[in-house]
Length: 243
Image (tube, rainbow, N blue to C red):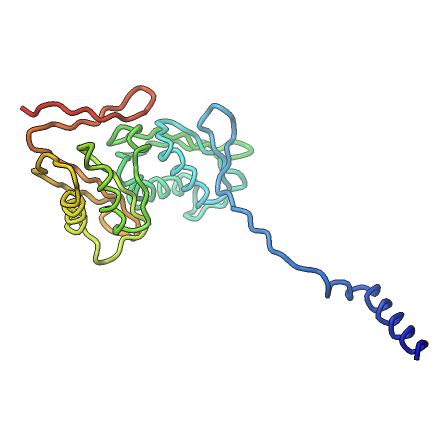
């Protein structure tokens, strides 16, 4: 009996030592790392690197979101999707200024120049904004329009003249009218008295799409609320008697 038990034990140990058998006792895991569409080329300058069309778009959006007025993108080992790098850059600029919510809201136009070198395409851009670039730091990101009213409950006591939301999911039921209703609900929920809201204007950027920027302009009775941007980009609220 003892010899049988010893033989069985030795056989089991032999199986574990064979290639592939030890894996039965190992735990597997998956490691997920974010894929970077573009890279910073140098410290202190707005020069980015990309290898694909989507990387080019992402780099341009990064410049816009940072409020940069000039910048450069270097395209390495680049394969065009339209037939030429210059055409790709033109298409990417159109996508940024017309389809992306932040770009559609903030950018007037992008001027670009494309030069080919031995190692890469050099894309130099000049970005003209329709709003102060510092304003982009004040954009409030929410997952859905249902969060707008809750955010406004905390903001309305400061009597802002403008509030900007980036809405991650804009449904077919959402509209400028529904966002105006959200402002009215937030105003009605205030526990302390506020001046009357005489006008609520909502502008959406772009006109279509599941992701939108909502620019909400508020006019208060008897008081003029102004957003003042300081040199370092910080925003303050200043109220003064209306005229």
